[in-house]
Length: 300
Image (tube, rainbow, N blue to C red; front, side, top):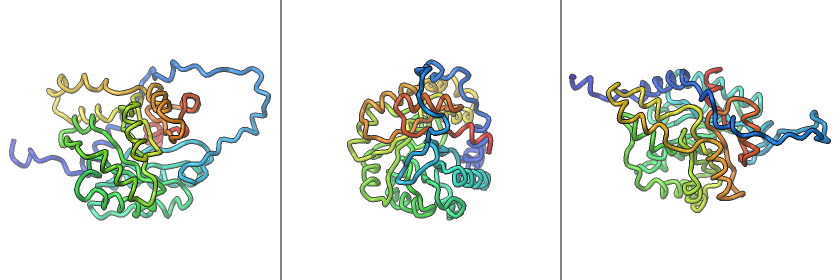
């Protein structure tokens, strides 16, 4: 290969490839939520029309406990998708999480138009934990919040994805301290989320101890970002990395483990949620908000 061919892809090219693979990715045919049976009451003694789904997230009232969780950002294609999602969030009074803002911030491309389209919606910014731990990480986090007037900033922790990603960040030292600094410094709440492998009880407890009160368990069952990165690697790498795709917690286990740590945390449950029944099961298991991404991305 020539030196030119050895160069890693530009961030925008990588993001577009991620978008293609994420849209093509299908949720599990048999999801672990299928094993959860909700208790059925034949004498509900209530009026179905009187049931209210509204709730509050980051001091903003939502029409339902639903969040479009972050999937994409940093390219023109992603911008167009996020514009559609912002309008949907505003119209239906649900929350919207962005994909990583790193690429757009570093290229000087503002996403402020999302806030103009969704002035009343909950908008959650997004930055990778590895970037937050960099020397200028806190400054980047402040810029991410300011750019969209975010109600909160999501910090995604994705060591498995980064380990498989050809150009991934492999140094995760100092991440917990960086998150703690963000909690103390940023003018809005910090939400910590995985990207498909789940947050274990131990990790949830460590985050709670440093003041994180909002977490998205983002467990196995939906879009598998580690698998997406594997598809970007040469075919001969499959035997090495394929076994690791089974790493992490399934969504029901992730919700149960996280809720057992504390009943004071705001838990978002995502990881292959397909429909209303899945959402109801997540709430039954202990989630406060249900996150969907893959299904909505394909529709957008």
